[in-house]
Length: 497
Image (cartoon, rainbow, N blue to C red):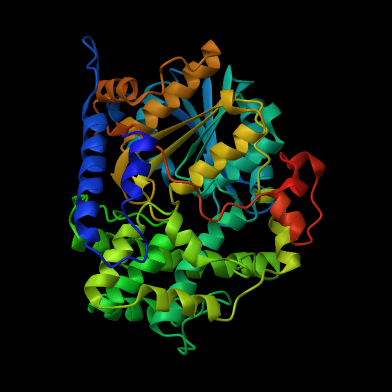
């Protein structure tokens, strides 16, 4: 579906009209669903494809230890080394045990990495640990032909910081399932979900923390949040307000790995998917909004999130899933305009200058000097796919668009990729580094064909364009809030906006 077609359909939804929006919603979502299925199912089958070697065929040497700050590292070097080293966060924790890692070793990739247990959201320290581990590898085995950064989730967020500051140590980067909209932007989105939910569902409940997450959150505010949202999900009014919070936060309508993707016209299933993303999935947004927020506050000395001056009415009108919210409010007999007015009048939050200064290195300029491939699945509630749009726009403004490609998988759950999909992305990046050109290698038909040939899981690459990131935030925005910013991190005329 073209952008124009989507726009034509979207015009049929007047956000506050109470005429029959359900009919138009069915049409739009049915067409969109057909498009996803069509692009996801069409692929070319390789005629002479051979499956990967099984783990029993692998022989490799492991070098493991602890860095000076207490972070564990691990390096696995296969006998059939193909000349390429992959290095990233979490490999030394448990990722080395995965089927994906075993298959990569079988293909001859050397694998290395560290854990996040010490550094967490201290991205600068984590980046330093990556470089130290790379130094250890080079001392053991010499410099590889290719050194590729491979980060997933927080590893991708860390990887974005690394490719902006230490690109000279790497030949390319695969950033998978990471919130690449910059730390302030992605955490503003998560903040919005809780702020809206609390304001509309239980504004006077002191147990429901939004910003100041206590250290004992696991036994206090997190269960309180989950209980509140579970109760709200039992009523039409609660379901409508959950949908409003989740849609403004740009959470997906499908994130639970054990559930089928909702049909485009199934309003109840779409709403249930939004609830899953917020509170009902195995890794709900509410959970991360407690644990990681608590850590960010401690490390930064305050909050990096704010909503002072934010117009939630305007944000809702700009979003593709606004129609879901409008129809749920209509069916519940609620006045959406009244709820949006209540959000406008609610006390607002400001960010702390100290925390913003600390987090500034986690906001990117977009100036790339090495090839970067991003891999995202559309049903990821932890790393909302709309943040990829912000990353693309940032890179475009910096004049680095030729170095970036973004690919998408039609699956649910955080980092919900099969080994075949991840390895195909890795191979695609390695080919780009070797040949100097992307060619047609990142189109979904080619990637599905190559992933199918690996015979280690489903292949679900699709053509996909995420909607614009509602809470995009860059270095110019930092300056407006009083943070001193390195001129090299600015890629637009701040005063012009």
